[in-house]
Image (cartoon, rainbow, N blue to C red):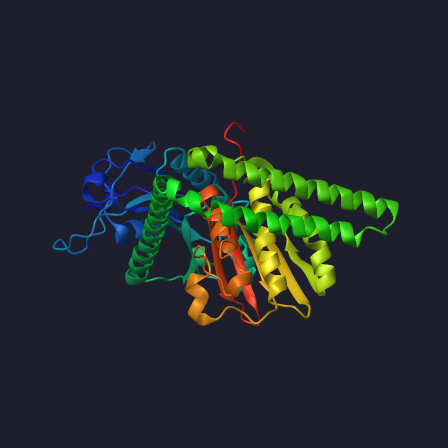
Length: 426
């Protein structure tokens, strides 16, 4: 191909016939201010066809160095400045045509470098992957993580100049594959959630048989908190008694809303959730207030080890239910006292809530069963519905995820992940 026909101007990618070749996202962004090096990316990743170099153009690149292969082409966009890159990424999100990954020169001739550029891009595009390319090893991995955040540590890679054709091709292939595999997994998870919703809707009549046990379990928890708070504060000062009364009223309100939820079983699943735009930390504090008496009488120390402030659309009553269920279970496995660590951490567009007790942990032979309805390790003292309700609230009602594992140090840990969303009309 004639080298004169290879352009280094900013390129606007238009898919054209690519959708007929593959459903994968093969879009790659290259940010490089040196023309010769930018040209090298074009040479390695494919050939460009264009009609003019004086304006933004449409281009499609083929990565097939071997005509006999069936590898679909990459679609790459080359730009030379951070401002161009940010504008292109914003446009790609608006058009629902995101980039899978990008190659970023670190030392750009601009007010910001490639690392800061990627930080800003990661705020715009929550899925894009990045490869930093530089001839200078002046930034450590820890230093880059400090800028991008540890939660983004798996979203970037590093490549030194001078690079080889094989290194560029392999990075492109690997990261594009990782991006597509992640999206495929998330899509399948969403399909599973939707299928579960349909299944629960179709099985709602048979599920009514579990209501009596569920009501008894949940109301038992709430009544325990009400009586415990009253007992703890019956001889307290006026200020403490006012605080206790507020906690009791809150518990009574929670009980009332739980009852409403059970009365709503005849309604479609989407109509049952009463969500508000709330600060999650306040909801966690409410659950703690309900459990304060039980913690004190059981010798349990409650530690909030990380407390990122976050606001999202949730059902206050439902999340309190989940927390109280897990906290009660934690006190049961530490009858002689102990400690419960709670952590609230914002990870991109997700908030992660961890509850770690210092009990004996979960036996390996029952780990896969603890969220199953009516499974209990407490014999006649247990109902087997608490964690099953927790899973339904988190995964079905809130489109989140709840898992359990044994902590590396000691005890069990429950991990709740919730999407950070806003009201639709905001």
